[in-house]
Every structure is written in structure tokens, then in C-alpha cells.
Length: 356
Image 1 (cartoon, helix red, strand yellow):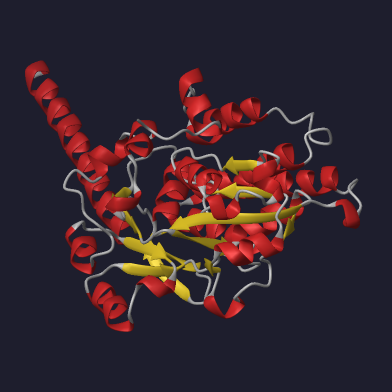
Image 2 (cartoon, one colour; image 1 turned 180 degrees about the vertical axis):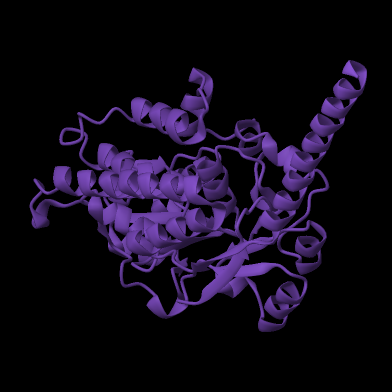
């Protein structure tokens, strides 16, 4: 009788275990079908899965934001491959695992093949037929168009956080507070400079043997003005968008006291250009290459949160003497990337040189 009872108990236990396992499978399946909504930058309500684990980012900067908010969580399954540097992948090696086939988000077919649940970024990268093609394939498309001002870019960060999930949404809020805090800090420190004494600045990028500059429609304009600089090209060629080609004659006529460039190549090109040899910025040696971490600071990236402070240290070192950019960068990489930055990499970021 005892043996029979033991068998009955065993069968009951086995049935209970199987029931629990089956319930878990059913529950997981049910959860995978659950959805929630987010509001994109166009004010549209977009339905996304409750648990978003596979995303495609239309621009490299938003791949960076996603990796930052997920702490390298392996959610990016398609991204613009040409815009992701080897250093980006060193800091976030999960990209090599989450996108082993190199799906390129510039291709709608690649996004679909990657099995992305959600794709996001500026509307301008998609045509209406492409958007419809993604929707028909079950890929939710979320517009994140804010790129031109601190408020707009903050909104894009928050939208991406909301797409990714509750934890990432909270991280996005924390990052936006840090971001806006740096802009406000730069503005407070530079407020001591009277309007008539503010330095006149140009931001120049190389462009096939000529130069491009930025106007007030570019995010870096707002970082520069927060740091107390006067963007000489603030109203230049506004009809062309965020920036336009500017010739050497115009640069000379503007007489910039400081020039910021996109990188060391552009800096060296300007310093070697005989047509620019007599402008104040070149004569005084005040031509600086903007830093670059896993992504360019000047290019609407999350690392741009550090740029107002860096601008200030270059424009008014006495007023910004309390800002230690080494510490700013080290803390940023530790806090937002969960990455301990070696000294040599820190130097490469803040003092970029042409790679031999």
C-alpha cells in the first residue's frame, strides 16, 4: 500500500511540475503577443511589442543612444554599418553578436531580414512606400526627428528610451538631465563674458577641397553659444539646411578668432591653407579639432552632451578652469557606457591626431 501511495505522490508531483512548465510556456507566449504604445515625434501613437528585444536604428547616432540606454544589451540587430567604427564595437562588443550578418538599416530588406520589431530615426531616411513596406512586414516604425536643438534632441532620446522599455526610459530621463545640466553649466560659466567681448567663431569641416560650416540650425551652434562663442555663420545659408559650403574668401572676410573643426584632418588642412594664413584663429594658433569617442561629439550624438563644456575650456580657459575634461570623459564612459576608459583611449578622444 505504501508503494502505491508513493507512486501516486510522484505522479501528482510530476503533473504539477508539467502544469507549471506548461503555464510558463503559455504565459511567455501570451507576453510575446502583448503590446503597448509610444508617441513619436510626429505625435503619432505607435504600437510596439511589450518587450522590445530587436531594433533597427536609421542613423548611427541613434545606434549609439540605444547602446548607451541598454548598456550594451544586444538589442540592435540592424544599423548603418558604414557609420559604426571599430572603436564603437570595442566599447560595445554586443553589436558583433546582435548583428553578426551585418544587416544595414539603410536597406529596408535588411531591416526585415534582421527580424527587427521596431525601427526608429528621422523620417527623412524613409520614403512613404518604404515605411509601408516595413509596416507590412510587422516592423513598427517610430519617428524620432528631433535633431536641431537641445530640446529636440532630448525628445528623441526620451522617445528611444520609451521604445526600449521601462528601465531604458528611466535611463533616458537621467541622461537628459545630465545633458541639459551640462548645457546650463556652460551657459552659467560663460555668462561672465560681456557680449562685446565674446569670441567670434567658425565651425569648419573639410568638403572635397573646400569647406563647410554650420548655421543656427545645427545642434553644435547651440553648444557653442552656450559656451559663450559667437557663431559667425549663424545666419549663413539658412535655406540650405544645417550648413553649407563656404569659400576661403568668405572665411577671411569673417575674421574668426577661433575655429573648431570636425577632426584632425580638417584642422591640419586649415593650418596649411595659404589662403587662410592671416586670419586671427590661425595666427594665434586657435584652431581645434573636436573630440570623438565612439561617435563624433559634434554630430547630434549623445557624446555631444560633453561638447558645451569642452568648447568653454577652449574659448575661456580661465572661466572654465574648474572643468576637468579628463574627468568629464572618464565619468561619462563609466556612467553611461559602463566602460573603464584606459589613458591612451582618453587621450585619443580629447587630443585627436591623424592616424599614420
